[in-house]
Length: 385
Image (cartoon, rainbow, N blue to C red; front, side, top):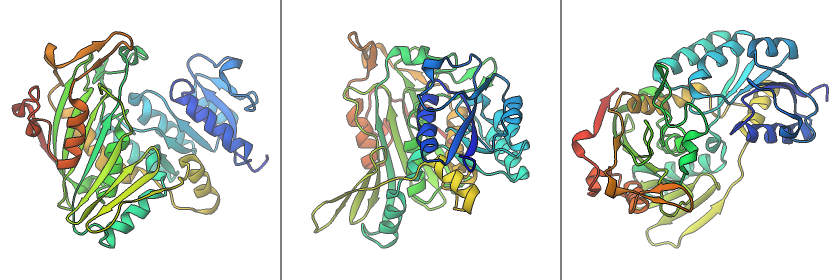
């Protein structure tokens, strides 16, 4: 185990439990060793997966990095804390896996990315879908003209979350908290992968690739942020990217990204690494792919120079979308007749939203353009970048 890379995990509850399990998997392979856990309240023995030993625990992130000799830090903490924690690690020479979204505003993202670049440490942003082996395959299909000329990329996410989802943490469902940006909306956090993956397939990954952003942000829940939203991104590639999302689906389904060509389409269910190629004059072709774990990729980068899959710079376009959502008018509350409560599940649903989400991805149109009675085109906010 002496060659195993020592790791500190900041934020081990909630989504952090996934990271604990993943670190355990890599520890079993002899690649990493969990040296420390940073939590305000230490984890109890039954909160730690078996086989992880007794990592040091502390609420002081910087001190924990020093005392454990950590070489890598995984940061899975509330969104507004990302930049400061990342810079704390970077200035100590500790490499990073930083959960998405990397920051709540473009300014904070730049402060993080520029600060990390100055230190020379490696940083991977946790868009796991971009580790899918399907992504380069789809890019090759597009480049080789499998579906003709590319006309745009759509994304669809129809998910469900109970009302309790917004009570799980003080920052959940907030746009701001104590004067600090949070921007915890459907497109920026739970369905952020749909946005990032659609942009990546379009070849629009850097900040300069985004030329304009139109947003329609709405909410059925009693929250500040959006739970039902869509965005259309103008790009330097001269192809629109439209992503529609809801956490109020009637029948939740797997999110996907669809690449439109003038002679076919490619659909990518990014959580399943599943691809469907449909083109004129041929039968549909479906395939499944593996994926590279982003923490494993980071460690391989440190050991043998393997290219990082999701460096901060290739999330610049995504952060331009986050910034447009941050600057947009606060999400409009859907009228009472536009949603209903499912008492058994204690969640709010928007009748018809599943079809609208799919139609937006299919036609690259916004909710208001699709005739949604509750989407006011006058509220569509366009931000030129």
